[in-house]
Amino acid sequence: MAHITVCEDDAAVSGVLKRALEHDGHDVAVAPTAGSLLRNLGAPLQLIVLDLGLPDADGRDVCLALRARGVDVPVLMLTALDGMHHKVDGFEVGADDYMTKPFDIPELLVRVRALLRRTTAPTPPRGVVLDPAKHEVIHGPAGETLTPTEFRLLGRLIASQGDVVRRHALVAAGWPHGAQVSDNTLDSFVRRLRVKLGALGVADRLSTVRGVGYRWQ
Image (tube, rainbow, N blue to C red; front, side, top):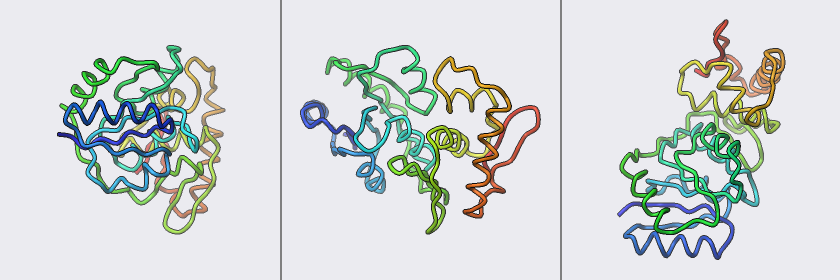
């Protein structure tokens, strides 16, 4: 038995998923919003089934926020969008698997079993937290509002756990697949991030690795 959270706002879809997963032997909780999912991360959790189109946040931003908080459990993303660039975007933000609606329950269960074979336990937040519903970066009692691109860039950096994130990887996280983004544009967004992080007293955690990319420490 695994502890699984289904983050899906459509009650009919979440009901089908809950019944199928419980019949397969799992303990299933349903979170209809990004906020309810993030508020309950302290509970036992081994896998997340995450809808892309939530009422309070984009599922891709939720996935980035989870990874930035140190939540490394597998994420199976569900969406009605079946374009290749949508799938690429999902993997770029940290999803482990991707299924388009409508989907077959037997296939979903097989994918869930495969993902559970490599489950790890979630770890506590790392001081700086991303809120995908408000598009904020939070440190202590203070927060700064981010644009969607700033949010995705910062999420990718924090989730890197101290590794250097190369420029092309940041572009892939911050902009749609195939977008043409110049070095000056990326640098401009990083400068804006530093200003907002400076207001929170953590600008020094974002460093430049010349000729390569950036690192969050």
